[in-house]
Amino acid sequence: MRPIVNYSLHSVENADIPAEIHKYRFYKLCDPYAVYCRIYTDGSKAGERVASAIVYKGITKSVQLPDLTSIFRAELYALFLAIDVIRRSKFKKFVIFSDSLSSLQAIAGFNIDNDLVQKCIKEYSVQTNQGKTNALCWIPSRNNSEFI
Image 1 (cartoon, helix red, strand yellow):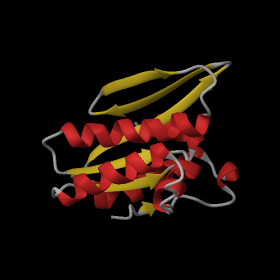
Image 2 (cartoon, helix red, strand yellow):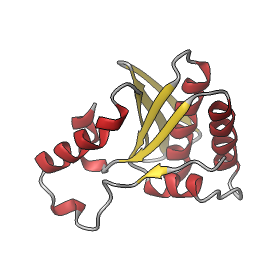
Image 3 (cartoon, rainbow, N blue to C red):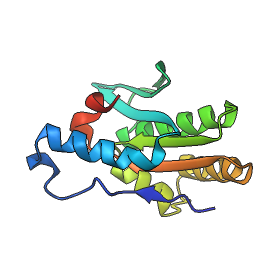
Image 4 (cartoon, rainbow, N blue to C red):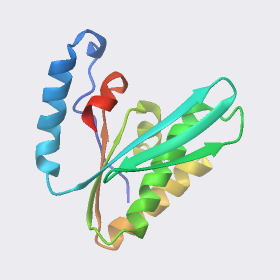
């Protein structure tokens, strides 16, 4: 099953939009997902150190990745962590928010040349086939902390 990503918050002029407008647009985006469990993802790199993290229901889970791992792979791994939370949960409806446009595009575009993209797509499909509703949404990176 091909994952569908909501890119409705994506626009060329995102850097020029005031934070209050981003916040309003984010809350408007969330309306259809009011009863969904929210999961926020992020990958980060500081020097040679790389990590992936997710936040959901007030819980933060992070994993340190091998040094020099690409930020793209860190973002993908964060998405994989979110999908793993979905797999383990008894809840049925989830929305994953990510600021990684390239990772979401790779997943939505079925870029199966990447092993981690393959794993994300496979597990996403398995969970969907088991009756879980999983939504993927892109959000701007500069305001993620305001959304949590």
